[in-house]
Length: 211
Image 1 (cartoon, rainbow, N blue to C red):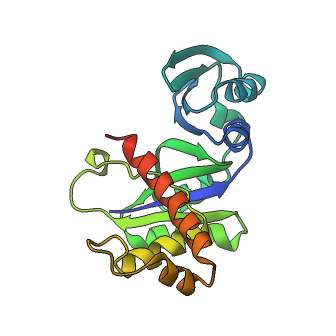
Image 2 (cartoon, one colour; image 1 turned 180 degrees about the vertical axis):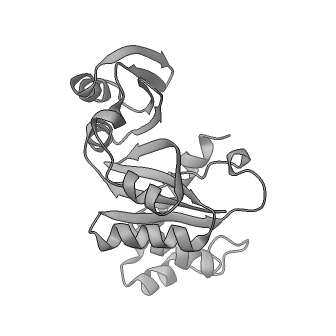
């Protein structure tokens, strides 16, 4: 079994709301309606969803809220990647996750070739997709495994983290300085440190959600 999480540049109520607020929205599609788990500002999400399909109920608890829609969002806003998933014998696992205006999809395939063929078909047809994570699952049910954290890093943040990790920045004691990382990146030291801090902040916040 193989798994990939892809990010799709998207529009629609959830994508628009996540882009404007910087929050995170998880969409669980049910038969007649959807459940939306919202971490972040609520009002822009309610406004977008109310206009599109209506809102039946809202439950608020601390920093997280749950919306119940009146009708199914996916039924009214067909997803361009659905047909590709069916044609390449892949499975789309819930929830759909929206962050920073992009939709994150968790896709499973029995073999790596099907997953690769599916992704290449998307790219060939010009869909705005990128791979967030890709891995081979160990034996057993993928439903019993921890869902990977969706952490959207910029290319420079990812490269800074890669250089830092590969050269022992996170070892004890450290094997490389931020000045040396900056030299590898071709930027000033303070810029490299900013890339690392922002990436670390995103990764730690994502991890804390599951602790």
